Length: 228
Length: 248
Image 1: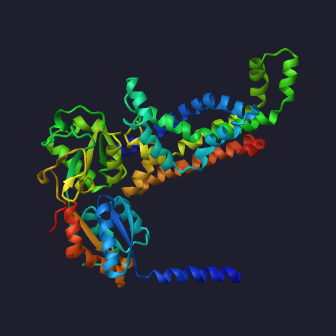
Image 2: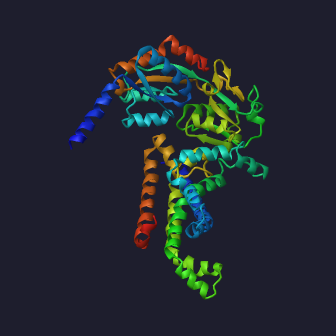
Image 3: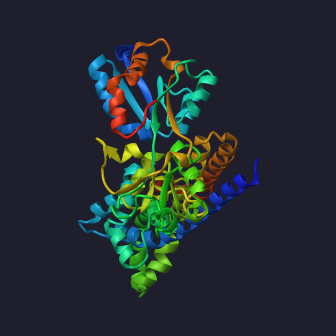
């Protein structure tokens, strides 16, 4: 097999890992306050917000991809905004993929963390309050350490789910080497072009990766199975 | 267990009742004309045509791997010929049903000029085309850009659709400013449906001969044979021409 073909595969692997890492970090930053709010609130909006967060679990990626393409295109509301900020439009760019992936993997991070926060209950936080910890202090020194397994599950699932993303990338990515051609798209291309040997390498690698991730999740962290 | 047997029997019976349905794999660029042709075919012959649209290369892989298609309307002549040689298609059934035309198109009415100079001098961020590895219109676009000497300039701006329909979708949503599509996608009743376009001269790429073939799964069945006959008839040819294809 030629080197050029291999280096394209490697570029796709590298891009996928970069995408998944950035998305995971962003999801932990964005997802934690959402999970905290969902776990603690008594607001009537809890159901609505919870449902919105969970939408990507049930929506076909084509629906999300289609709406994102239209919304982020030059005539869509997001596209108008990014253009007026001088950023151009988001489809066919790496930042566009990052934003789409954050939306797409949101429930996989929010839900385990939310479950972990809920499992803590009121008591430890009340105790912290009686010891004069501020809510901010109590959050960082009580809630976060107790919810650690939830964060771990969320991060692993968010990462793995982004690596496995395909439909949305196909719809808004444009298959650009080094920018939007991730492993799943590269595999699809190989299969379509009947390059089964290369497809097998990448597909087998994905299978092994996904299995290892789930195995790690279940063996290192057996009690968190419920969090899924 | 009896209930299951009954269900299986019902399922098989339902398969039997649509024996005069023909499963057709259709190249994405031929979507609109084929829907019209299929409607006429159903009315005139009483047979039903179940149409699947997609990239020709993907259909090839699916057919080789046992897809239930009986007729294949490809976007090129190579894949049908290969299927025939490999025994997945009925020998001697192959014919050219349309000759495709490649156009450079934009949803913006002022973007593409009548000579296609925009490729050499225009400023834009993205140019869409179908994946040249698997879609004949994508390969033809590469050929034309190579002959025009603009490939090196334009290659960094490529956004590739999985097939020609997706390339069209990228352009029609404005996400890509312009791109290469099939004339049939932007042409109806003898005129362009919107935006601006340049018909790429036939001298810039190999002719896009679109061949149809009867697949092994459709051998000796009435509906697939009837559909191929219908495609060669005057009704179908008039529809094919109205979408801007040439005919042999």
